[in-house]
Image (cartoon, rainbow, N blue to C red; front, top):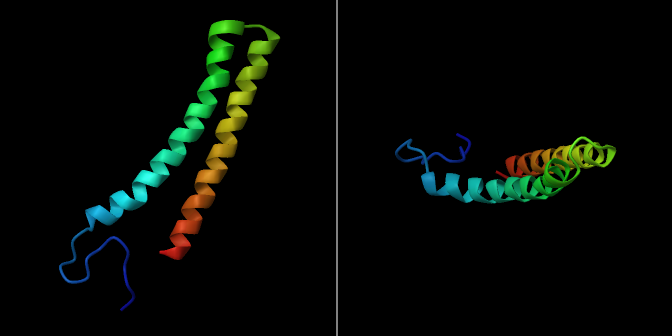
Length: 83
């Protein structure tokens, strides 16, 4: 029988410590990209408003979130293959 991640083979219960060990780095990675995207969004909202520069900063924030989504998905795939 193949080894199943996050499940104790003896009792069949979830290994919550292993779940947290995998979830915390993922949450930190997501938080980094959200924090990076907040900077251009804040600039667009508070400083530049509805100007062309505000739209540019808004697009930059969306680009940061798109790149962050790709990085998080690659991390998930890489961790999934190692588990």
